[in-house]
Image (cartoon, rainbow, N blue to C red; front, side, top):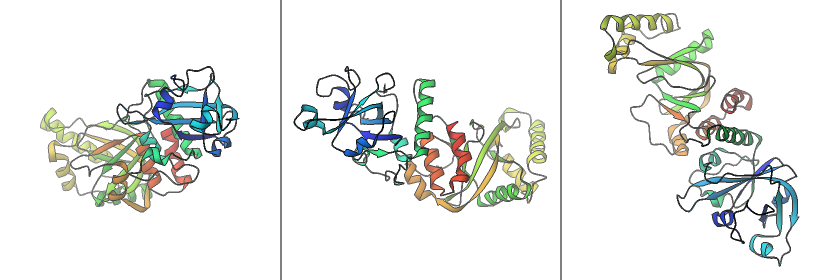
Length: 335
């Protein structure tokens, strides 16, 4: 079966019937009234989610690696309190994660074995009343997050995995045309500091009220001609260099006057990033759809926003692209 997720009340995780935490006893057990629990096999992983009463946040509090399936007697304390079905866990491979692994964002990004994600706004605890089996890509995402946790000792909600940015529809069409005609990476100019992302990270380009392009991030560069920091001659020389390197030889570039106006506006261009593998989404994803799922207000006056792992996965799935087209982007997230 692979991996499954079950909800556990915080008190049952922290104290249980004996006043000791779930993973502190001689035998680690998890009980349920659902026969579905016994679809797990030896070596499968059961991820437990609980809501902490102190901060009202959901966490992956434990990983139980199944060692044995058991049945509780109906009249036993465990059977009466928690149900007939039980597993015992391998103590050497199971883990107590406590409050180190925030769960809500990832849970809302998963599609599960059924292909039915948790609906926006739905209560997490209620949505996990039925033990949920993870889809293979869900497992990959969760394993990647766990590996990051192990390397960094804490998962930072704002760790960047992807990028959202916006541009005028004219430039969206310009980027797509150049990629399809020339097959060469294209440069996106920014008034902001250069974004920092691993090569291959997904870039979602919003234009005319919808995300219309998915692209792969390659690298970013500072522009030395940023207006307040240099002499005018250097600034103009840098403007010409960037024009020649990234615009002059492209298909249907902006006019030189428009480029110069853009460059000189709002203190000038501060950075650029290079992208390739541009995909014109067959169905643009309206902000009203994806912004609600990400719990965003419309990003006014910003050049880009970083996306967390869960946000990046949610955005990839919102594109409704085929598995083969999405795989390079998922691989970059999960490497």
